[in-house]
Image (tube, rainbow, N blue to C red):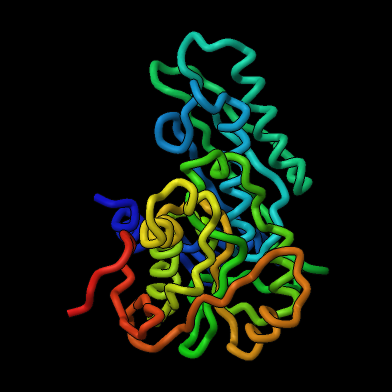
Amino acid sequence: MRERNIIDWIRRQGDFRPEAVPVGPGDDCAIVRCGSERVLITTDQVLDGVHFRLAEHGPAAAGRKAMARNLSDFAAMAARPISATATVALPKGSSDELAKAVYRGLRESADVFRVDLVGGDIAAWDAPLAISVTVIGRPAGVSGRIEPVLRSGARAGDAVCVTGELGGAWRTDRHLTFTPRVGEAVALALKYRLRSMIDISDGLATDLHHICRASGVGAEINAADVPVHADAIEHTDTPADALLAALTDGEDYELLFTLPKRQAKKLCEQDRLPIKVTRIGTIVSGGEVLLVRPDGRREELTPDGWEHKT
Ligand SMILES: [Mg+2]
């Protein structure tokens, strides 16, 4: 069973009262009501051998990534993270130093955003290092007036934009050293009507499908406009492979968002942002997600790349 199928299954079991849980499983963070406040919550884990390699990257990098992935989910909603807890499953017989290094890594990432690490649990087991982090926070802005941006708000006609450059993150150490786009997301949401947003963890193609599915729309992405990272170019042999890496590698932790076309024009052409933003396509009605070639050829953009349309 794939992760997506399990999440779908869990959503079908849920019986949330909308007034208590405005946003349940399936977005980057859940939103729950706590008295008169809305609280955002997310949780994510990293595993030795899956998300990092302890022998190669070390425990501090693992801790750092565990925290940063969660903070990136707050960026994806343009929300403000506040505090975190962490559980660490240490390989049996590991030194105190290893646990301390994990802690220092968690703190290093959290401190950048003044997120407090307020609790957790440590245990040892006969298996590789596993770190799980939970972060809570609130809507951003003065008195929380910036609405959290969901995956489900994209509309036909919206421009599709991304921050930064994509691809090659796990072929280098970028998947361990990235800074979550929390500040950038809030700055964008303050100024523009962001209709939907997600952070690129699984890859542009897959994460775009998440937005389209949640919003009940499709998208057309211009192949020539996808910003390909130098890491992707350097670690692949052909431009086609570099584009494939940008579309499918994942772990970029950049923002993928949609907004009204006119606003995108202003954002990309006039705004002096501290971060590169590129318009890569358009949201369309229907459910098809297409990659449009410079010569006008259209292919189906799948989570694994592209397929010729028949
Ligand atoms: Mg996410």
